[in-house]
Structures are given as C-alpha cells and as structure tokens.
Image (cartoon, rainbow, N blue to C red; front, side, top):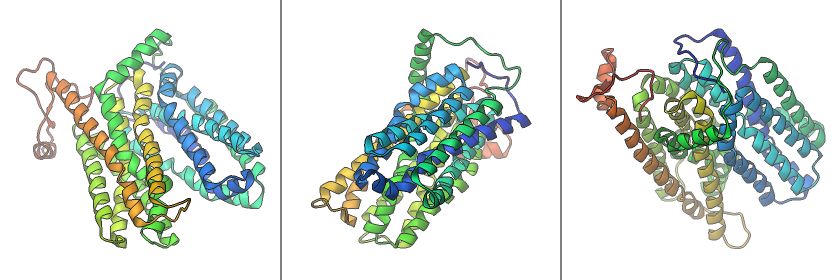
Length: 462
C-alpha cells in the first residue's frame, strides 16, 4: 500500500509513460468488453441461441463488473495498481480463450463472467495511477482523457476484430484476442510503476484494518456524493449507447438504420470533445463540481421529457439535441471519481473509486432490465416490433433513478459543505465566485468562527 506522495505542482515526464501503459491496458479492456457485442450474430449461430440468451451474456458481464467494484477497490488499496491491472489482463485473456473454445451457452457465459471480472480490475486501477502520479489540478483532466481514449477499444472491437472474424474463424479470432490480453499483461508487468521513486511505502494493512478502512470509506459523505454523482449522470447515456438507443431510434422514432448509427456515433464524439473542457473546469473550480453535476443531470431530464412528450415521432433536430446531451453523461460521471479522490486519503483511493463506480453501473443494469420488462409488457405475444408508445413508457423508468440520484447528491453535498463550513470554507454565490476568480482571488468565504485556516490541498467541496 502506497502512502501519500509528496504534493507536486509539475508533472514528471515518467508520469506520462506510466499512464500511457495503464491507458493501453484500459483500451484493451474496453476491446474485450465489446468483443462479443460486435459478434452477436455469429454467436447466435455458433451457440444455437436466441437474442435473449446473447443479451444475457451482456447483463451477466456487467453484473459481475458492478458486483466486484468494491472488493477490487479494497484489493487495489492493498496490492497496488500494477498487480491488479496484470491480474485483470490475464483474467480477461483467460475469458477470451474459453470463449474461443466454447461450443455451448453455459461455457460462453463462463467466458463472459471472466471478462467482466478482469474488466472490473482495470479502470479504477488506472485511476489510482493517475491520482498518485499527477498533481492535483491535472488529475481531473487526465481522468477525463483516460475515459475518452479508452473508448478506442470499442473501435478495435468494431473493425479489426470483425474483419478477423470474417476472414478466419471463431476460435482463431478469440484466441487472438486472448493473446492481446497476455501481451498487455507482460507490458504492464515490465513498465508500470505504482508510485514515483522515493515514495514511502506503508506496510500492507491487516484484514481488521482493511475492514475499518472500507467502513470509513463508506461512511464518508464525499464518497457517497461521488456514488450518487456517478449514478445520476451516467446511466441514461450508457443505457442508450449500450442497448436501447438504436431500437428506440429505428423502431420507435422511425429513423433509417444509417441515421440511427450516425446519431450513436455523434454521442461518442460529443463525449470525447466534452470531457477535456469539463475536466479543466473541475480542476479550476473544485468548489463548484456539483453545479456541473446538476447542470448535466437536469439538462438530461429536461431533454428526455421534451422527447417523450413530443406529439408523434420527434423531429430529427430534437433527437440530435438528445444525443448531444446524452454525450455529456459519460464525462459528467467522472466527476464522481474526483469526489472520491479529494474526500478520502490516498490509502483509501481504490475502495472509494470502487464504491463510486458501483452507482452508475447498477443503475444502468436496473434500467436496461426495467426498459426490457416494460417493452415486453406493452407488446403482445413474443413480438419485438415495439412501437413509440411502448418506448415512451419504457424510457419513463429513468425518472426513478434520476430522482434517487438527485436526492442523494443534494443530501450528501449538504453534509460535505457543512463539514467544510466547520473549518471555515464557505463557498460564495456562483456569480461572486466568478467575479473573485476573474480578480485572482479565492472563491470561498472564511467564516467568522473559523477554527483553522482553509487548506488549498485539502478536501474539495460539493
């Protein structure tokens, strides 16, 4: 377990090399995550399974990913990023190798469970690398870049893997995918370093201390603020991009398949463009992160409301607006990890990030299942010819999770700000904060009864 590094204001060149290796591991994890999705038709033929069975692969994979976030976070705090990323890469490689040999549904399900387990070890481990190697203000930007650049793994799954599957065979394709995972594990083992040279290392914590740290992580209002931030900002865009967006656009709104595919591509492009500026805003305005969260969440709710209440199919311009707004969801969810970073000591960074990551993925899974259940309930027989009325009712289930998320953000933001006020940090109204920042002054107001001076390097606020 690594103790807190010495605060830095400049990023050492070695940090970019280490981050690059971790980023490559995350790109490959995304590649593994999406590999079966692009081979769905071939999977149905190979396993003689229907679409519902193939969908089960996805649900189980994401369920395993979500369920392992907290245990992986605890292990990350104990063993460090290098070991966890290597373990994740080897686990995903094993899953792809099992899938290459699989000839029935149960074996394929086991393969995807292994992929989900290895995937669960990767992202928060790379985030810990970022948190330890980069100075505080750079962390939100590099975190956003990690999430954005990792999506190149989807491109690798969508093009080279599909071409390989077309030109060779199922066993050869997924054996090749397993080999990629093995190569990444070797690279990480050789080149990734948990912390800069000279960083003191604490002795590994015992199980009693691990349990105490996990309990402290959960009790921390900043951690829960991060969890609800991740939940309320992530799930709608994830559900739309992952499963139900394309059917909604084609079957519900009547768009041509090429137009629907173009809108889903636009969603990814918007996310890639929105992430870095958002990361810069988070770094420059740490006391205003929740304002960004509310803006993204409320914008998503309002846009969906207009689309769902529109008489008849929505016009294309409105659907473009919807997709653009949903493109902000992924970058917005990364703010949750920034709360985990600033509101917890570094020795609890892994478990805190794991807790945060649970929020959006659990909400996404529940929403995917709920939308499917409503669509089936409103569509007669075993038909999958869903109409716009059914889609409107199905997507209305999102309001439940938006309500849960917004209430959680408001509640825990209030607690974090109350704690900050107790040490003299009181955020001023936004317009005054902007004016103060333009004049080069701090954007907080010391309280009259301040007991200790505010520490710029201490916890941020909601």
